Image 1 (cartoon, one colour):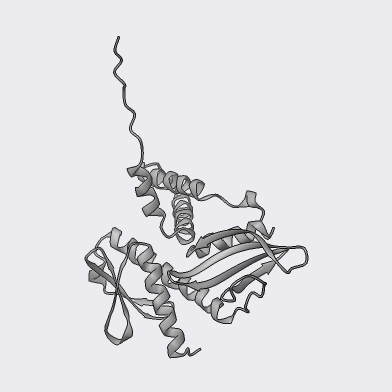
Image 2 (tube, one colour):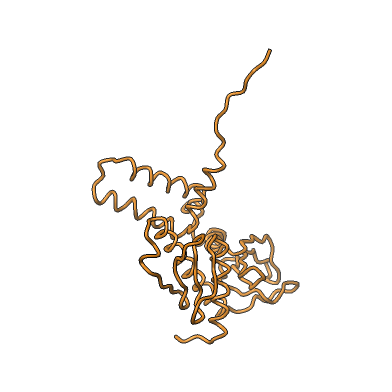
Length: 229
């Protein structure tokens, strides 16, 4: 399906914001593309809505492959919610700016999005009993995946007990990595299953490696306190 030049412009602007938010450097490139860099290293280019191109010699190590995959997930994720924002009806509530769009509405809970200065912002609310007002807003800024999870559990679409919290997912990911690196005598099916768990977590939490590094940096080392008498 073809898109207008204005829609493509909005998408590329939002994609640049989302990529920069996750630590990538983004610059305009030839033909209206977006050049994506990791630090000072060229990584890939966003050439269409939901698509990238890259050169194999620009991803020579597993670190760059992982970064390219992360950038691609962000590009696809942005394409998903920008399409929704284009098609969604306005959220009509008194005393609420008319820039909000209804992305999902179920069981007395609404997931809304709005274009803002720093990209699309997401929020979930409870409807009042007469559906004329909203309360108990949970705000997610540009975290689309987090907003969707909150809506799913808050509305009862998915029981909260069936979803892991971010902290739990990080520890599961660590355990998978430790198991694969420990040299255990795993069968092919076991290793395949563990790697699929890692991939599933990465898809749902594209910044997981950044979070793990941040956790490691803030780990408090045990220390001994000298006592005096």
